[in-house]
Image (cartoon, rainbow, N blue to C red):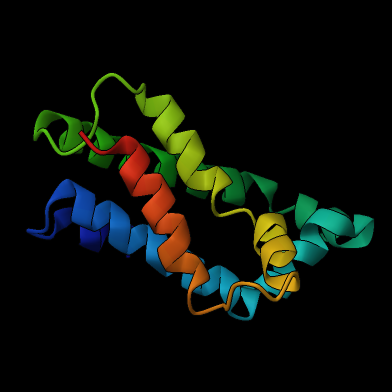
Length: 129
């Protein structure tokens, strides 16, 4: 899916926004419980340990695609070139933390439908050129 979006005719920022919002929706869906279990349960982590190599490869490939999009956005004048790509990339992943989602949603002050747009607003305003 990342490759399809990367190859589309959308601007780099639009591609990043789409991927960010899709990731939010997946995390808010049924994957939230699985991700929380992964981070909090030693048994689940043990079961996943054997799949670590595959997960690391996927993460590396995803990070490379996102870094390319960020660089494309900087070159097009959409994203702030003074912010290092590694900082933008790390912030992208940090804002998608299942723990953070759970903490925010547990307050009852933000709905699951509104959370992605608030996070995207924070991220994309922060890296805009």
